Each structure stands twice: as C-alpha cells, then as structure tokens.
Amino acid sequence: MKPSPNFRLCRDGFGRLVFTGAGGRACEATSVRAFPISAPDEGIVLVDPHGRELAWIDRLSDLPADLRELVADELASREFMPVILRIVDVSSFATPSTWTVVTDHGETKLILKGEEDIRRLAASALLIADSNGIQYLIRDRQALDAQSRKILDRFL
Image (tube, rainbow, N blue to C red; front, top):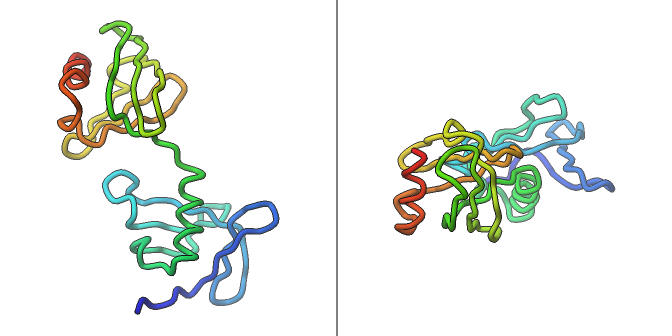
C-alpha cells in the first residue's frame, strides 16, 4: 500500500487547483514537470503562484487515484506539445517553410522560421518550434516513416 501524501488537493469554484498542506494552510497551486520529455511521469512539483515549491512528487503513479487525476489534469491544461507522427509535405527546403504534419492531435501546418528552431534532444528525439511558439515533439526520428525521415534529414 502506498503511503498517503501529507497534502490535499481540490478545485475551487473557478476551477483552480488548491493545495492544502499538513499545517492546514491552503493556497492556489500549479503542477510542473521537472523532466517533461525524458521522464514525464517522474519529478513533478507543486508550486504556489510565486513559484515556491509546495510539494515534490517522485512519481505520478505514487499518488492516490483522485490526486493523480487532479495533477495530471493540471499538467495537461498548461502543457501543449503535439507529437509529430508523420511529415506529409514541406513547401520548400529553404526556410522559412510551411510544413504539413500529422500529430497525435491531427493534421496541421506549422511554419519553420529556420533550422535553428529544430533542437536535438536526448537520443533521437527532436523539438521543433514553429513561428507561433508552439513546440512540437518528435520522440524518435528513426521511428518515423521513410518519407518523413527524408524530409527531416534535409533540415538537420
């Protein structure tokens, strides 16, 4: 049996996450991932509106189901990082270029301003920033289909 955390979480009337610590003090809280790409379900911190740490969560799975759901919902509401599954087309191999991609949220177009907006992460993962500031993740470029890899290689 997992130990019960020494805090409580709930939503207030405005839908904000409220943290109540062991001392009974309640305040608004936000959940933040320490390692959003390499370990998304490990190292989660609850912070107050000033960014001060309220609680550290080693693993999301360590929390009871009701708290886990609240923290996961909070993370999902503040993080939006579509995962690119396939690159359908690019308007040009010179930048800026418009990419048509299929993500885990459907097909979309993004504008790549320059090659420097493609960042290499651990192993074969990539992070692509579009002109609107949205970050797109490619978890494993080797797992992409051949056409997608060929297009991507022209920019790397």
